[in-house]
Length: 319
Image 1 (cartoon, rainbow, N blue to C red):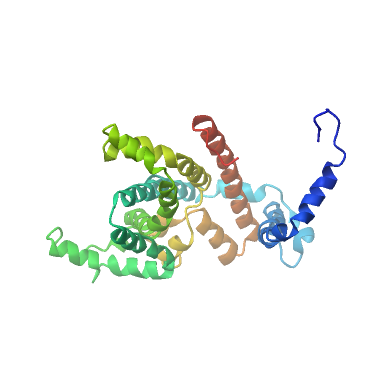
Image 2 (image 1 turned 30 degrees about the vertical axis):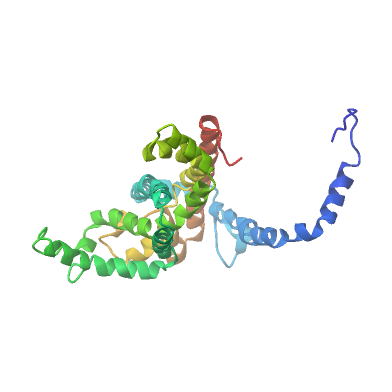
């Protein structure tokens, strides 16, 4: 550390230690979070070694045979690789295109509601599904789309749109719309809270000045609201792009009846379910770890690229 005179400040480490201990009560509040991060995020990284081994539980890490990139080769050469990657990218892309902008639109609509009681009631109704377990949501989906007594079929027949019931759950092509729709219904309200909070922080004088200039509601949204919440939008977009290989597990697992629905499975097999199938059910721990490491590396690369692109284009970034 350089002082104003250009000489090295030899007391900098001592000053940092003094600052740390003088704020010990505040610093100690961070320690539980650091301990949690170390135990559950960094210590398990030791298991990455399995992806380069033919891991055997009895032999442990150091006794298992090293096969290096053989597990990765097997995954890339697998006949299921194309299907798994297609499903993963397609489901993630639909989520990005539909589920990402939907909370923004919902937050913009909430901002236009002037009746406080109505606004709070609608907001509560929209974010409550987030706290509903996926087990319950899957049961609701099965009840709604059942080919025998499902509510969707009953409604379509009552409206005269169809004459005979449609078994939506026996056609794999219906899986993606059902999955995306269930995710949208479950998460849209809770995801909108971030944008609602950002909109609340906008200075009301901006809207007043826009009204004096004759701006309508759409103009105020385009030229005031959206630019004001753009940093939050781009940060969340960066995270969404980095997680594009996270097509989901729990929702897919339950909506395919624990991966036992042979009709839906060709459209539902993604990286996360493949890791579960090969690692837990087939006990191929090294292979499953290699697939998980592949997904993690791609996610980190996408995170860095998306962050750099956002910094250059918008000036907003994670770091």
